[in-house]
Length: 258
Image (cartoon, rainbow, N blue to C red):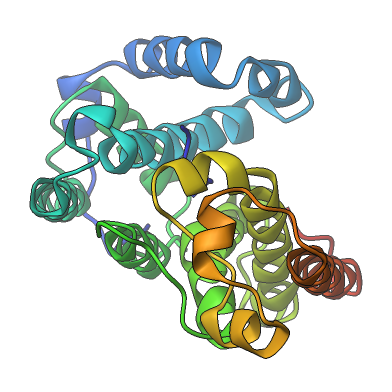
């Protein structure tokens, strides 16, 4: 099962990134990762300028590998191990910010950070926090507000990461594009949650808010048993409307979101 997709730093990244791994080595590794998991992105990347495509690929690789840490079937029943892996990934991020990549993919991201100095670390940290919330045996979401926050953490953050790559770096432009970029990620995440209801149930996960389930009389046991009751269908429709509202916010941005 694939978690939905689910920097950037005041760094002194000089030639160290290039010494650890030439850019070509990192890009080859990124292409291999995309070919394995998301081959459509290889096609989409051809629509971007070469440097932008390379930088977006480096961000993709960081997010994809984090997804794999959290969704590894070998440790899916061991939250403590997953949390330890996430903590190690944060330590690795800190090292990267200091200019010390551990492998070719890290080095490719360092090149991205060097090329886009307005990237900040906060979106990465927020994504890690969202992934950490999934490292439990029975994942639940308490309220609609919690669901929207989670959607920001694991997907809206991607929009923020991409803004500098798309030429949005001036303070005024960032202020105008930030909300739409986040909203687009949140919409996609809510759609993914509805799409992945069956595999999530198999893992004991329910992302529909508990308060809204209670209001509509949706039973957790019925959701986990894949019983599509009228009340459940109503909540799914409500969640789809929430996603549509986020798409509307994304489309009304002062600048096109990523």
